[in-house]
Amino acid sequence: MTQSSRTKVLFLITKSDWGGAQRYVFDLASSLDLALYEPVVVLGGAGELQEKLAAAGIRTITLHTLQRDISLTKEVRFFAELYKIVRNEDPDVLHVNSSKAGGVGCFVGRLLGVRRVIFTAHGWAFNEDRPGWQKFIIKYFHWLTVLLSHHTIAVSSSIVRQMNWPLARKKLQVIHLGRSLPSVADTPSARAALVEQAASRSLVLPNHPADLWIGSIAELHHIKRINVLIDAVKELVATFPTLRYVAIHDGEERAALEQQIITHNLTDHVFLVGKIPEAARLIPAFDVFVLPSKSEAFGYVLVEAGLAGVAVVASNVGGIPDVVIDEKTGLLVAPNDHLALAGAIAKLLSDDTYRAQLATANHDHAQIFTIEAMIEKTLELYT
Image 1 (tube, one colour):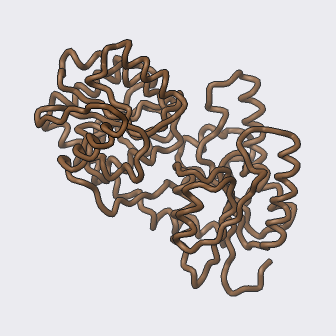
Image 2: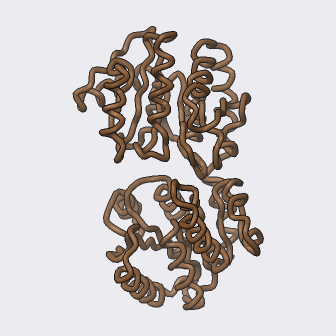
Image 3: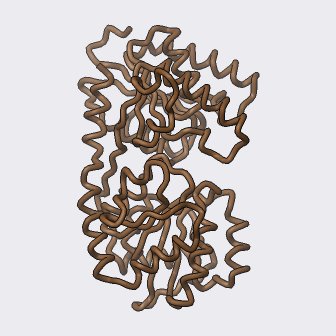
């Protein structure tokens, strides 16, 4: 290992766009004390994560063979390229993230004798909609990844429960993700910004004082179940005719969701405004923040909603109950049930006092999910 007085930490992540796992790697790498640690990030592609790391003065290494899609030729090339990088960098700690990078990275780290190989499980791919035999094979490789690591960080308690195969439990430790919001907009400014963003998409988003707004920040992907929330809005507009639902983000489901909005005659009520940088600062625009996912390892956005002081409704799945305490800091409902979702949203929209009570409790509870706590617990595993 390195003879430097600093501990070299080599992070590995599959994609360099900007999502929850990428924010996690950025927060860890950029928060390390540079007098004690030397962070380096190995990543696939050249996206927003790489740009943010460069701006923070953190060295990055791009792996051109690292992609999510499986290809035998590329897997061999990826292994060879990563092996060479880890050997040349000679890190004290190899901290791998995401399923594919995790499995290969843990194997390479062990092969080269890296002192500490840490794997962070941001979620399990076997929770996705797949045939049972595929789920079994994927879980087997996840299990091997956990066993190959010295320690596996689980971002929520559900991650631990779901990896219930022999010998895995002793390798797993829950370390919740941390988040901070240096500043958020007030409600009028946040709504005005979203109206402007909608206009850039040729959408006319009404903004009257009496309007009720709900919102989500979630990739337009089938696992996020935005279609279920749109069905809930269809039920709600009869009782709340000035209801506006603003969905922030983009994704492969956009075209289908746009058609669903037209079919349900909700063009005055549902607005897909696209991706917005640092969208969490606009959460105060909403009376209620909603996350209807079928699967969620943790739910960064729910912490953000708490820090922004907004009441939440979310699916009772995965790591969400680690963040939202049902009927104390928010409301939890069964996934894929648009009527239950509509009922929970209606309960908050129709009772200002109860909504404010949950919003305050949510804000207080969110204070425990700090970057400082996440860093402190993670560094204990590096030694």
